[in-house]
Length: 226
Image (tube, rainbow, N blue to C red; front, side, top):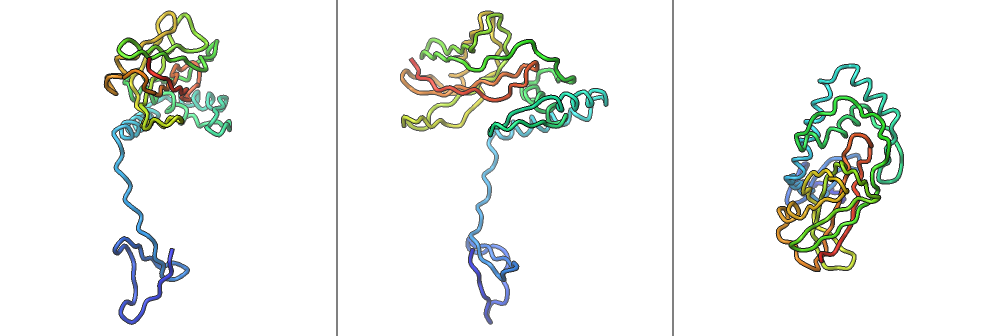
C-alpha cells in the first residue's frame, strides 16, 4: 500500500485506474494494487454448490419433530475437523451433511437421523490397479458381508516428482461393496481419465456415506499402476 498526496491538477482520486486502486482512508489517500477478478467457478464447484443449496431447501419441509430429532442427534454427535478439534454442528448443518450425497446422486432424502450402527466402518483401503484389467479397492479391515456404500474420487499426477503432486480430484462414482468387500472401479476410472497406463502413479480417495456412522472424511492413497 502506498500513500498519495494530490496536487493542483488532481484534487481527488477514487476507484481503479491502470491496475491501481485509489481509496480515501483514515491515513489519507492510499494507492493499492488492483485485485484480479476471481476466476469463474469450475463445473465441480457448481455441482457442489447446487447440491448444498438443494439439501438446504429440504430442511424447512421437515416436521418440527424431525427437526428436533436432528438437533438432539447433533448435540450428541462430535465431529472432528482437519485440525483434530471435536465440535458439534447444528441440527440443520448435520442434516445437510447427511443429505449432501442424496442431492448429488438423486437418492432418497434422509428425513430422520440415523440410529447408532453396531460396528465401525473400515479405516483404510488397499488399491490394486492393473492397466486394462482392473482397479480393485479393498476396504481394511475387510467387511466380508459387503454393503459398504462409498464415493470414489481419483486423480492423475501433475508431475513425476517423487513427492507426487496430483491433479484436481474428480468423483468417478458411487459404489456399494458386494459380498466379499471388493469393488472394481476401472471402467469408471477410465471413463473419467482415459486409458490408464502401466507404471504411472494415480491417486484414489474413498469416502463412506452410510447414514449409520458419521465418517465423512476422505481416505486417500497413491498407487502405481501395474
